[in-house]
Length: 449
Image 1: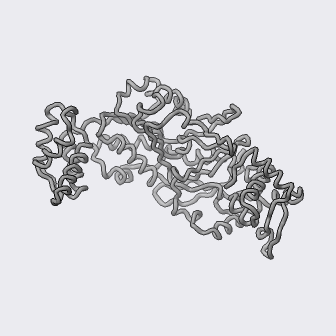
Image 2: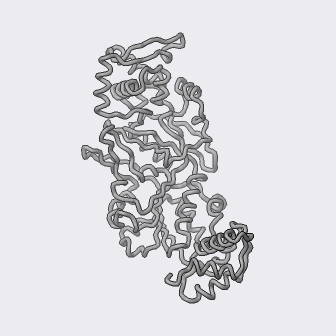
Image 3: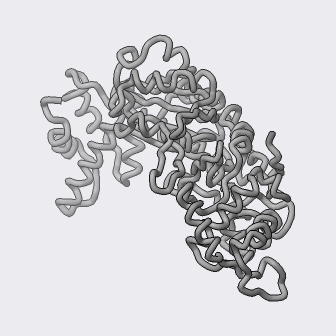
């Protein structure tokens, strides 16, 4: 049973932040055993050398009151010694390993070489995940318009996106290439990342003595508006010495948006075990919990669509997944994320009816009608600081779009940027004419397309 405590923390946007995990007041509340913390202390001093009590507390992200008992135990067992201190008290003591302690630390390193913030118990991580699910986020047209402002969408399509986000269920975006599927998926991600509020994730969690790291600075964006992450080590120490502060083993981040494409394979969806260090890194989709996992160009991954969907068919239905550790034991974890499949292939050729049924929302994006095409064209002219010339659009329809080539929304950007390049090369002011569009399209739209 989880012993973690929580407090409501105000968020910086329209969605309230989930309840923040509070600092444990005792060894029992930390969810970790005496032996576990003792091993972490030994490994930390072994790798970093002599350390002050306050620095050990800060490095492990645990209040000194929590590590006081393990430090006393290690001292009584003659595994560590106090090399000095001042009148501030135990937090100022300098701790080092004895010869016996170094031997014990080496043994601990052979079992697991993880050093850093202490992990949280698996049950605390699970509880926090369900406190901050993507299901039921506040999402309404006014809030959604900002991240979609750069896209030209029909009102009907725009109104289909909001319910998909609120549901927190999977979304299938499909249609011919070049019409904004990826842009739409990324706009959903932008909404989640900014207006969706922030969440708390642990640096790592522990399950059956297996340490699994979660926080990834290359994927998770720290919410730097949160006061608990101010760049002030003294402030951090004061929190670790006080009561009622946010548990420093957790990081407040913006809802993650993780994008993967053709490089996705099945091993990326499993725990990654470091043979030398003997701890695990969470799989890529697991790090998206509380946010968005976008599979771009679905159907072109290294893993076949069938194998990928077989891997996820139950998690999508049951909202939980299983991670397998080296011993073969499976750990049940939340599968709480908005998964977006984006493809320009025929959905019926990729997935069967059983899987499509589990994807709640399907959004088809077709080639734009002329009125929409002209709006996209005009928007790109404005973006490039270029005049809008309707004769250039007339030429494209006369020469290409009425003679077999399907209009693509991306044509507007690509053709106008080609015009821009021609003007710059000729040292001319960037402008648009029918003749320049004739030249740009001849270069861009090869006859074999």
